[in-house]
Length: 346
Image (tube, rainbow, N blue to C red):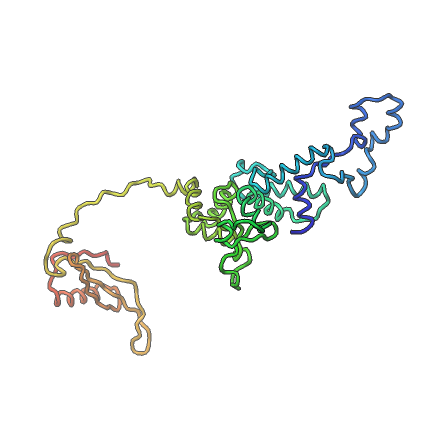
């Protein structure tokens, strides 16, 4: 991870402030004599000199407004949250968002404002995605993260062993088995590990589900992996989350029940000679080579309704004359049927 990106992410564990002597509003808030105010009139009108300068003289020490004991408590609480899975601070309340793109956009705007204050030239959108992924992984995969950062003398977690996990740019990724493939991008070969039941994972799955036009579980899971994410027990996670998709529930609901099953007609179950009850239909045209050139031919299919036997006639066209000639040939072989069911001929 770049130095600028790491410095910006560290902002959330630093409390910076402006000393009282640099606050022009305190001249009135704290009170002073008129003579004293006249000597400080320029400071009251224009503020401290560094406002018009190129840099802001923030405090150089984290939590400088606290005593040493309070600073130690604050840093210990932060480190415990990261290393032991306690609630990690987030930029925005995740449960208030119903779209991952909206969450990413709003987080990016917040970080863009912070970067301008700190005068850092970084990609706010990329940094927002990294921050959200790191927050999720620190909250859920604290044990795996602790092992990957310092594996000495520790038991290998099962998830690290099964998915060949490693850390890349501060994110936990899966090694997988297609690392040598030349046909996939790096994010597909080494996807980011997501937590099965985390709010961010739910938003990402719903976003992938919308991109694949609300198709089923398999298509959503394939789109999720194409985007470079891996969810343990992914099929179960996708199935659970898709049950809350309002659009799918609306269109998959059966508005009209199918009709009840009725008895088959007598012609379908009668034990008679073949083709006593016959169905007739044409197929689409076929190209047949005849005399050195290709011509259109059609198939006329006679189907026995009782034993499902078929007889096929090859016709040059779908005219009435061609059909009657084929019917005569059929009756010469099998006799005249007692019932013929056919589509209307054009």
